[in-house]
Image (cartoon, rainbow, N blue to C red; front, side, top):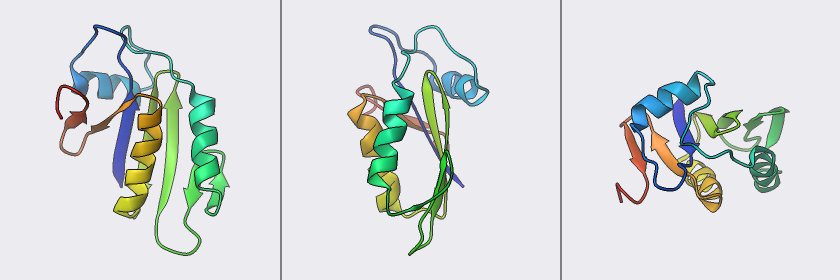
Length: 118
C-alpha cells in the first residue's frame, strides 16, 4: 500500500507536517487547517474514474489492469490508500487534489509537496 494524504493550511498557518498527518489519519480535526469540499472532491474523482469498478462508496478497482485505491476523508483531509496502483494513476489523483489547492504529504518519505518544499 502507498498512502497519499492531502490537506490545506489556513492563510499564514504552517504546522509540523508529520504531526498534522498523525492527527488527520486518526480522524482528528485541527486548528489551522481549512475545511475541504469533500463531496465535490469525491464527485470529481468518481467522474474521472468512471471506467473503474466502484467497489464501494470510497473504493475503486481498475477492471482492465492492476491497481485499486480507497479514499478516507475527514472534513479537513483526504487520504488515498493505493494498492498496486500505477504511478500515472497516482499522479492523476494528486493533480485532482491540487485543483482544490491541497498539497500532497507523502508519509513514506516523509515530505509535503507545497510552496515551502518545491
